[in-house]
Length: 376
Image 1 (cartoon, rainbow, N blue to C red):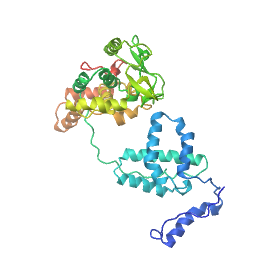
Image 2 (cartoon, one colour; image 1 turned 90 degrees about the horizontal axis):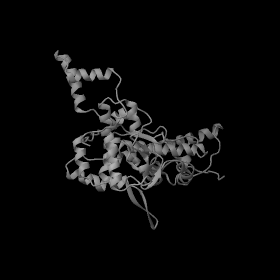
Image 3 (tube, rainbow, N blue to C red; image 1 turned 180 degrees about the vertical axis):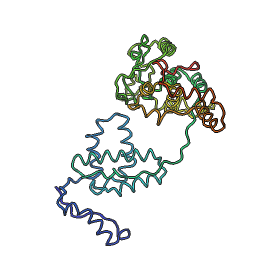
Image 4 (spheres, rainbow, N blue to C red; image 1 turned 120 degrees about the vertical axis):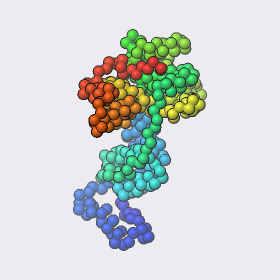
């Protein structure tokens, strides 16, 4: 093992001799106390190669894509040539602060911190460092964020009617099922018309198939009779076979073109959002469609467990914290109740219904969670 004979503390401009001695003392303290063991020497860039083969290889495609983007664009330019043992909590904090000053969103900063922490935890596990310097990095407070407007059922119907098939049915299906866009990788055999179920058994990102994000494999999505009829009509129109993709795409595999599921990444920007803009609709995103679906279910007092299962979350509170919105009807009931109490006004029917609904367990069937809307 190479002997480490020097350590970089800073420049004379940045550090006085006293400050340099104090900084060196912190580094030498565990060595002089006899509590530390010699560590392997490794640069951050060198360990990233190991991290890819030891950790990233076991993660899902979407996770790998996110990590690789941050490694290439953020981590390596900042820490690449540094020895792992030289990366201090102060250096990580300066990195986070710099990204914040560049205007990065708090969620982006949070992801950068989590990613760095995962890398350093692995480095500690394999003996390259003694602790994780990203663990205690502080994030700036959440800034003012305007909530994106949810489309109405009529607006979604207008959009879907204007889209071409099979894009129209794909958009409709994501809206009524609230699935993730990458879970649109259905084959016709995944549809059980008799049970009115559509099973999510795979996901796709940029043409690469992988298992869905949800912890439960083969997650069933319950449909209504009208939902099944729409899908069967599309199947008949395209003469779909059981092993065919429900929403096919042509994927280039080297010099050969092979069939595969549709690419949701390009579908939204190229085919759906331009039509939405022409119609004067709110900015449509896949996430917004999931928010719309979650809000409709919660407002209809659908059991939260059914909503959780439909959206594919591992915890039910995720639905209420991040997805469900308050619609005008519930907001009016809350306003009427509180304002009326101070005015001595009788309780409105809407407010009374709201209180009764909150006191009683939500009543709903699997069909209630299907979000079937007459206009869709």
